[in-house]
Length: 430
Image (cartoon, rainbow, N blue to C red):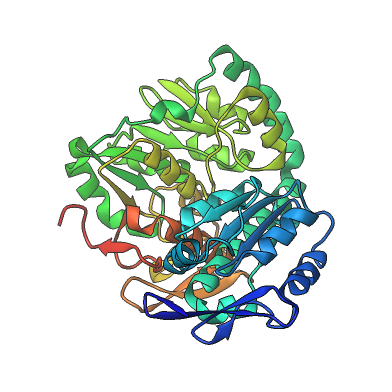
């Protein structure tokens, strides 16, 4: 009997001879035949399995059996309680195996490391194994692991649907972009450390941006500004020139955000699949990245273009770009992930102006906005004050991505939908 951080550990011989471990009276392995238990669990995995995430705080029977049955699989062994693992290693070294090279041990649990592992492997060929006793002992960590895995699966499903619908457009865009990139191969890695010690603002075109335009203008000299393509023209109409513009969606319709934008002296951050009209503007420089869409992956690997996680929205890509710059703070403005006050976009954005210009007596702009607000995908969220806010299912997915970087960002304005763990302020420098 041993103890670790107030947990009681007990090692006993099973009926078949192999040792079994219990924590706080909960057996982590079969007390009859733990080896056979591990064999049966591993045998249930698909033959197409390429990667396995196994949550293990015991004697390692299951990850070892998986490694034996799937010697080419990439295995991530997550140990929720590091102190238990340390005690077992120190006091019972003869019971703890030497794990093969294809098993990576993650302890303490790190969401960032797990997210990276998930992004490196397609969810269709990745198995997640959480034995019931481990889930009972460590419910919060196991719940978070499941949430991250489900989020990655949703992202891949969204990407797959997008590729199915716009795959031809992706291919055409990449063919037009590659000659420019090959002539001038510059990537987002050049962003490294460009903002050391300086506050940075990532600006979207959500409706709350309207109330912070003057503040951004007054603080302009103190900020490095990254504007998503939907917000770039809004800023420029108010006399604010961003340092960087980030674009993502390869469709013609989204290229219209920058159609009348004055690009002189500004850096564009764009995927290899960006619509060709975007790269024809007189940007100061274009720094390329690659998205995780399958049609772009092959070109990225061939030409060594780094990936940026999209999170399903260009605003998430902009945050990834900002993080590369090593800033002091990352502020988020106009990234509402919902429809505060029943509004969809900031004044002066392409979406708002399109509705205004195309509206007529029988189909006014208000009707077009109302159609979006009444979408079948609509959902309800909570804003920063805990009040209900209209949202939709896509934004529910985006919020989970932003929650991954909650501790690194500060959200401006409480009216946007709540992002778990993220600090919210009313003003930039209050």
